[in-house]
Image 1 (cartoon, rainbow, N blue to C red):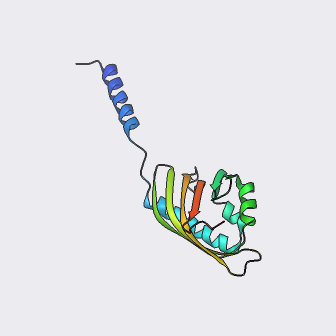
Image 2: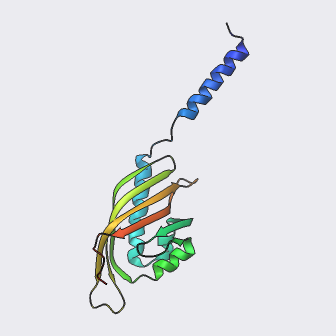
Image 3: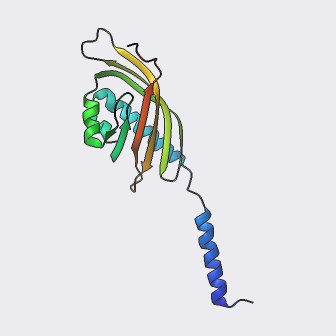
Length: 158
C-alpha cells in the first residue's frame, strides 16, 4: 500500500492531467443567439447610417478585410471607411452557420445590399458572402476581431 502523501499526489496529478486533456467548451445556444442579435443590430445601424454603432461591434484592434481594398485596422479607421460608403438604402445579413468553441466563434453568412453611389442613375444592388472571427469578452459580450466579405456578382468589365 502507498503512503498517504504519495497516494494524494497521484490522485491530484491525475485530476490535473484529466483537466488539461479536456478540450474547449462548445458554443452554447446563448452564445449563438447573442451573436445573431449583434448581427441584427448591426444591420439596423448600417441602414440608419449610425457608423459609431456599426463600429461598436468590433474589437478595438479589429480588422476589416473588404473586397478590392486594403485592410482597415482599428475603430477610427473603420468609422472613416464606413462613413465613406455611398448611401445604403437596403441591407440585410443572414447567418448561415456559427462554428467555434470556447471564447472563439466564426459565423458564416450572406448579405443583400442596395446602395446609391453619388451621381449614379440607378441604385447598385449586391449580394455576397461574409465570414468573421468573433471573440467572447470577459463581460460575456461578443466582438468581431476580423471580417471578410465579397460579392457574388461577376466583376465589372474594364
